[in-house]
Each structure stands twice: as structure tokens, then as C-alpha cells.
Length: 321
Image (cartoon, rainbow, N blue to C red; front, side, top):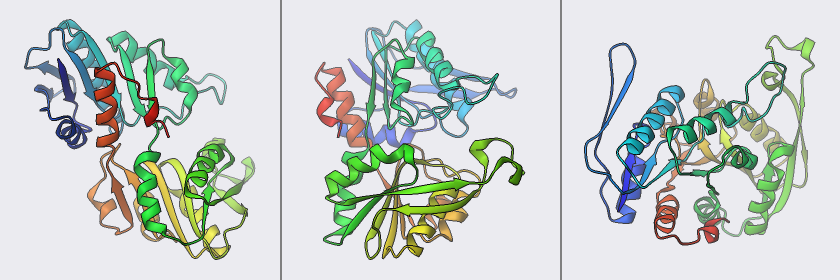
């Protein structure tokens, strides 16, 4: 018995997944008391069922995480046979190691919470670091968004010369995979950040980028910036300006998770980016779409097919592009 449920963060995506699978969204009552506590009630029988709970840990991250944990616990106590947490965007993934003394490894803590709540397995997309799978002692399937993004990019660029660009050294592997499948060249942005005494913002991760050098050929080409997420869009928009200055005929950014926090939307609107291609792993705010630069592609078919194969005990490795 396959059943799909959703928290509040991804209900439209969950409904698309249900349409692909030819089923209906499960009935659950999720409400918040006046003191902020979240209450969950599953209002249909799930005994012995194969349950998939769709919920991204996005803004408000703590509320959405708590919703997911409570739903998993409710299914466990209702005697569900297997509970899969479908997390299109795994929040806290950037806190995956100790970068300073006396700090938590939050991504590991979230993994422990999901397991303790009763999750049997996790299905997610484009983890910030693939090694996060090792934080779990249950099966984890990390889907890549390339099967969704590549067809659109091919139709978008046509026969124009293309360079796929990594915005930093850490994203080279991802950019190389896109470049190989698009038959494009590869370029890298070399970021030089301010010295600690030159920044008023504490912490290395927050220092302003003061210089960006392009390594690779982009002159006269369409430059496609590839990253796993766009948060405040500072690095992305600065990189776009650098690519434009280096002679790129157009700059397109391609990111799976559109966090778009703080000044991100205004930065994208006024940037050199011609288009920002994202997926619906995180619901897109109306003001982002009103910029005219944001193109949203759906993960519903990719996730829906993965759910179908997991339910039927089939391999999903062919979906990993």
C-alpha cells in the first residue's frame, strides 16, 4: 500500500508527485497552537503501509523539520510498515563539519533526529556534500537534478558555444559533469576574499568577495554557472559580472535549491544574469518570479519515479546522472 503525505513546505510538489503516480495525497491535519507548538494527526489508516513523507527543511527551517519529525513519529506509532522521508532540500546541510572550535555538526544531528523519529530511509536531492549520506545508518538515496536541468539547458543554448562555470573550486566536479553532457568547455571562478582584519563581518564564510578571476575560456560563449544552491546570491551575481567582463555573450545560472534569502532577489533582479534556472525543491516566492529572470523546473517526475521504484523494490541507480 503506497501512500504519499506532505507537510506544509512542499504541498504543491507532493500533489504533482501524486499526479505522476496516479494516487491521491494522504490526509493529515497539521496545525500550530497559540504557543507555537506543532500538532500532527494522520486522519486515515496507514497500518502496514509504505509511507513517503514529502517535506523540505526550508524556511521556516525549524518548523518544517519539527513537522517532519512529528509526522514520522505519528506514522511509526500508527504501525506503518516503512517510512521514507522525502526531503527535496536537506536543511542544515552546509553545517556538515567543524569549521571552528565548539560548534555543532548540525547536518549529523538532523540525521540522528530523523532516524530516532522512525524514518526507515531517506530520499533527497543534491546534498550539499555527498558525504552526508554517511551520517545515516539507514539507506539514503541522493538524487541529482541533472535529468531535469540538462534538457532545458540544451534547448536554451541551441548550437551556441558554451562554457560551464563552477563558482568555486568545491563545485568543479558538478560543473565537469554538466560540461561533459553538454559538450561544453569548463571554467572555474577563482575567488579571493578579504583578509579578516578588512571585514567587519565575523567568520570566514561571511567575508565579502573582493576579487574574482576566471580560469578558462568564456569570451564569446554562453557561460552557465552551475551550483547546488543559491542563498543570498552574492557569489553568484558577482561571478556573473566577472564573466560578463571576461567577454561572455550571456550568463545563465543553474541551481537546484533556490533558498533566495535576504537580499538575493534584488541582487538577481539587478545582476548581469540573463536567467536563473532552479527547481521547485523549495517553494519559490512570488517576488522571485516577478523578476522575470527566474525559471522554475519541477522535480516531480524525478522524485515520483524514484518513489515508484523504491516501492516496487527496483533499482533507481539509472536515475543518477
